[in-house]
Length: 430
Ligand SMILES: *Cc1c(COP(=O)(O)O)cnc(C)c1O
Image (cartoon, rainbow, N blue to C red; front, side, top):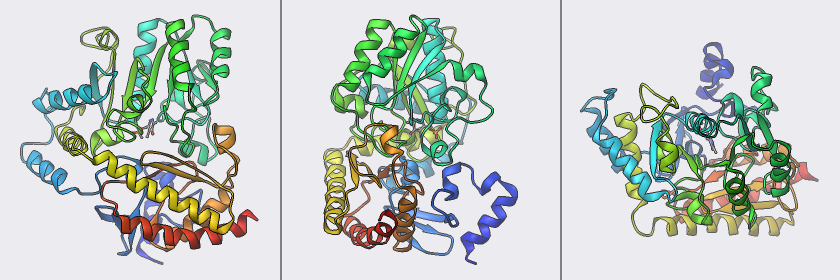
């Protein structure tokens, strides 16, 4: 038994399932999760001293790489000034201004501690502002673990087969209407069926929790039109895509402006941060300026603000997104070559440095398509990659993330390992 296995045994006695977030437990792929001891640049190292090229990146935040010297140094200095005050700081103003500068539709922003808090707060704001109760979300989309969103949820919930969690009230479920991703007609039908009852449409502008599913041309624009026409608040959940697919997120990449935006992951530079922001007339309705309540003891925490700010500064330097694009393209094109060489007809998707290899053929445009994936073949592929020192997400319905710390050599080593791993997985596909 290695150290990770022993730690997992101990963990399972003290922590449900041995983990603090379900997908980490390797249930979808089998075996014991690696316990991580340290990380640097593009690599993570487990408790047994094995090193891996990391494409999980803490599920998105680590876009500049692990333990970036500038982030570490900024944190070291910040620590010495005290770690929390529960009173306003200049750092919060700086990060808020940086977000407003970078994200096209955001005029004002409120910091919270996670993506989940960001989305649930945005929904409360939309409901408070419109006086309506219902929301529309898309099947296979993940917006964190608040009750309203655990209806046909993606990511870990889908992976574990609990897209509708017990403990969510019938009332909460009734107020969440489900549409099909990339299908405007499904949204129109819901709007027709509940006139003047829908407060918000919440969408991942690039779906990243059912694998990676890009929006088809016209989809985001169509949502904008419907929401404007029906006075519905359009929320882009950019917790994953924010600062990832472009400096200003998917709304900049596709040129569509939502009313509210939720952020997280990269915004905290590896520390726990979320945020919601958008039109000033909406944001001014948040307490204490307005009546819609929202608060947090550790919100705007100086360490978290420091890590986020330094990360966004690095991302604002010239050539950064071009570098991410060229590394990601190298990985994507290499994957296509590997698939062709093996005669495998599998779907790959990519938007910037978010990538996915679906163990399914044909195009993937919605959860229906994604859910046709052969998850057993993915598990075999995952295990073979792990064995070869490549750390991918331990589930099919997740993205792979490339960071600025990855090198061409990392990518090429990954592709070499991938050729062998695909050859193993194909036996299960046949
Ligand atoms: C990760 C994620 C969330 C949840 O964020 P947490 O910080 O895990 O609560 C919400 N929405 C999207 C799109 C995400 O990818």
